[in-house]
Length: 51
Image (tube, rainbow, N blue to C red; front, side, top):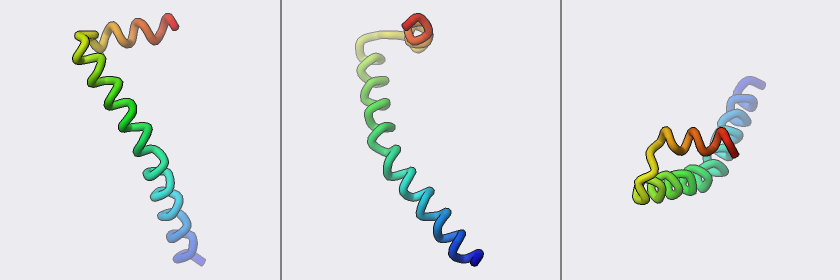
């Protein structure tokens, strides 16, 4: 049973990584666009707390 559980765990980890990859790309694009526009990270934190 243990090998089956290990395989199931690996499949779940792989699936989550595949699912999160596009989300990470979107956040990277947003961060780079904010950096290009000159918005500082502390301003981003302040804006997200008030929203």
